[in-house]
Amino acid sequence: MQTKEEKAKKQRIYYQNNREKELARCKKYDDEHKEEKAKYREEHKEENSNLCKKRYKEKKEWYDLRDRKKRAKKKGVNEHFTAADKRYTMALFKERCFNCGSTEQLELDHHYCLDDGNALTRENAVILCGTCNRRKDTLDPKDFYTRDKFNKVTDILEGTLILR
Figure (cartoon, rainbow, N blue to C red):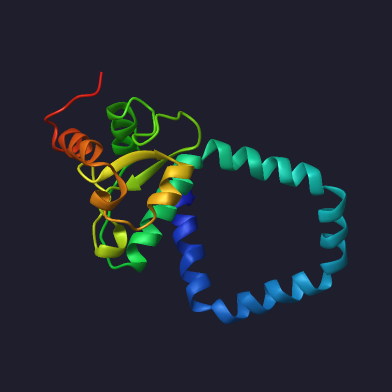
């Protein structure tokens, strides 16, 4: 008797060797059941919408991580910022926007911009609210923060200052 792994491996090999045939089979099935599928989707629209929202909430960290990696890859930057790094950064900034102190719509921000080739790391991650993050955009931190705030955030990221 085959194990699940052996069966899955056999199916992958079959699919790789018969990809065009399998795609044609799936397309034929979809075409034959198009109306049934559309009717089902319409009848279960709200239920499916709620399910999608629930899944997104449950896996928000995963989606955020995936989206950050995709964005960094497009810019040619190798990023390995984990969920643990995010929790560390949130704790470091006391779950508040560094710029205005808000606790609403908090986001991770690249202190030094991703567009300039700077990866998101513990030393380059700042917590900002959505409004401040949009205002900062791709500005250099020296141009966005006041001199005192810039010095303070630099000290925090270098580990020489801890927020109380």
